Image (tube, rainbow, N blue to C red; front, top):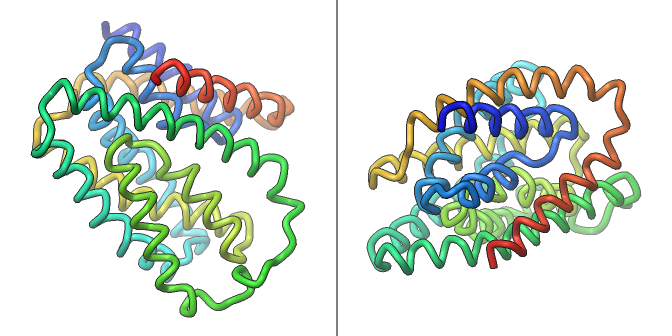
Length: 253
């Protein structure tokens, strides 16, 4: 099993490095389709994501491309909401219903993520500042916390969306430079998936050998993909990744 998981991590890491999209939206459904229990797949992916996003957060913090205020407001909503989702899932459902809930919600969220990748890819450079974007973040505190609550609940159930869905929300509602958008998104995602991962750890839904094997494959995969990204047109590949995510979502429904 370890060789297959390493190859899986290599494939996912390669696509992430090459296109900048995918991550949990590719990994979690692949684990489930490969026969991993859905709750184990979600918890394992959260821990894996926490480790990988730690390095990105440190780098963006050094570059001063993290909007700390926005991260704080999003986290105020997302972390408690993800906590509630995980508690409800693990205390008020039996194992069969838990697996079915995760698979069904995951299917719909993957479809949403695929569409969000396509929207961001084709429209992020064409957006004109709207009224909400021009408002100071302090005036959007309530809205920001609400967005965190809504999307944090989804991440708690599925491990999906900590990057892609939050990135689209930030893109449409806040006026940030491209590097600041990415840095803020990664820093918040690190906080969210770390807390959610610890909660899944508390209920025993983590497979550590899978985490280590995924990291063994994905780290060189990301490096190879990142190296090739300057030589390969990424837009068609991002479209392919979005279609893979869309198909995975449909397959899980």
